[in-house]
Length: 584
Image (cartoon, rainbow, N blue to C red; front, side, top):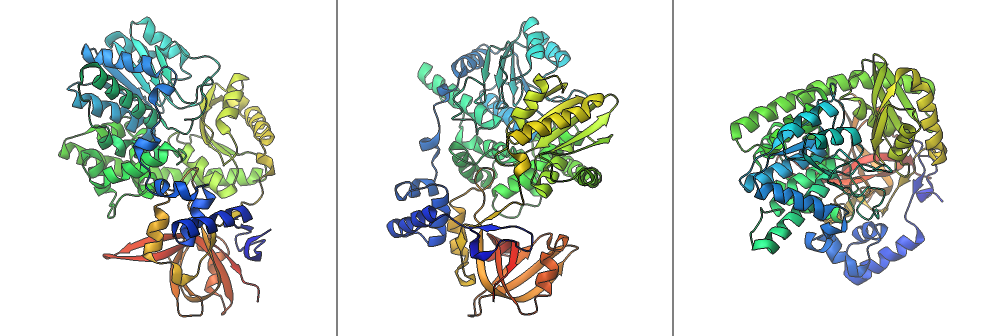
C-alpha cells in the first residue's frame, strides 16, 4: 500500500512508509526512552530496541571491535609482520590505487613510522599495469625486500605472488575482495570475503582489515614485553575515510570506525588530510558527505589520471609544505578528471539509452574512454537507471571496465563467474563494485552472459525505485536540535540509508531557480510554520516546473533533513527529493 496515497509521484515513484511492525516498535521506543518520534522511527527501522538505543546512538569501538584472531591467517600475518619489524627487514607495501588502498597503505606507513621504521610504497599505474599485483612489479619487489604486504588487492593474484615468492620474499595479503576457490601462495591471506570465512565481517573494507591487524600487532607487543605500540585511535581518521570512500556498509564496527574517525579528523592532526581539507574548502566539521564527495574523489584523482601513489603519499605525509603541494596537485587533477568524466558520461548515457534501460544490465563501451573514469560513469548510469551498470574503455584488442551494482544484486560474484567461464580476461570485486578486462571480440557475448547472470538474481524485475520514507513530519518540527539527534543515529550511507520524511499537505510559499537545474523552495503548513528546501536537479525532470508553477495547490513533499551552515548560522533545511500533488 502506498504512503499518503502516492502511487506515482512527480518523479514516477511509489512512496512506501514504515511497516505496521516498525510503527509499533517506534511507539514503544518513544515511550520507553523519551526520544522524539522521528528519532525512534529511524532506530526502529534499523531494528534497534529500547535496551540498545543508548549504545547505538553513541557507538563505542571497544563494544563493537571484533577479535582480529577471528579472521583466518590473522595470527600468521601479524607474526610475520612483527618479525620483519623486530629484525628491521626490508618491507614493501603494494597497494591498490583507490582511496581504500591509499588509506590502507597510509595506516601501515604511519604505524611503521611511529616504530622508527620505513617501508617501500608501490602502487601500480592504472593504465600501464592495471589493478592489483603484476608479475614484473612483484618480481622486482621480491628481489630487494624480505616482506611484501599487499593491501586492498592480492586475493586473486596467484601468478604475481608466486613470482615474488620465487625471488625469496614472503607475501602477506590484507584484502576484502571476493576470494576464489583457491588462494595464492602467500604466507597469509587475511580477507573476510575468503570463501572459507563465515562472512560475519564481510562488510569491512581493506582499511578495516589492516586496522584489525594493527590491533592484533599492538596486543602481541603488549603481551610479549609490555611494549606499547602506536596510538591506533588516532589512526581512525584513515579507517573512516577508507570505509566511506569504498562505499562499505555502515553497519556493525564500520559505524564505530566512522563515528570515531570523524572525531579524530575534526581535530585536524593529520598533516596530509588537513592540507586536503583546506584545498577542498571544507569549512565545517567533517561528515560522511565530505569523505565521500570532497576528500575521496581528490585522493582518487591521482590513481585515475595522475601519479598513482600521490594520494597515499599525501595521507602519510608529515611535511606541511610538501603536503600542501600534493593536495593542490590532487585538486587540479580532480578538476581535470571531472572534465574527462563528463565527456565519457554523455557518450555512455546515449549509448546505454539506445540499448534501453529495461534490461537487467545497463552497459556501454567506447573507444579510448579513460580507464580512470569508467567506474564513476558506471556509478552515474546506475543512479540514473536503477540497474547494475558496466562501462568499458576500449583500446586495441582489449577493453578495461568497471561496474557498479544496486542493493540486492551481487555484481562481484557474477563478474567472477564470467571470468571463470573464460568470457573475461580477468575480473573480480565485491557485491556493489567490480572491475574487468575483456577481449574486444568477446565483448558482446560477455555482456549478454553477464546480463543473464544478473537476471537470475532479479535485476531484470527491478521497476521504478520506491521512495522509502521513515514517517511524517510537519515543518515546525524540523528544528536544528531534532536534526542533530537524527544525525546521531547515523552515520548514513551504504547499508544505512539516510532517513527520509514526508511533509504532507504543504503550500509552496516561495520558489527560486538556482543555476541551470536546481530549485530553492520555502513551504509551510498553513499554520505559520515554514521550512526551506533545496532540490538539486529539479529541472532535469518535472519537479522544478511543477513546483514553480504550483498555482496555490497543496503538495506532499519528501526528502532528507539536513543542517545548512551559512555565514556563521546553522538552520534546518530539507534536501527535497520528490513531490506529489495532494488529494483535495
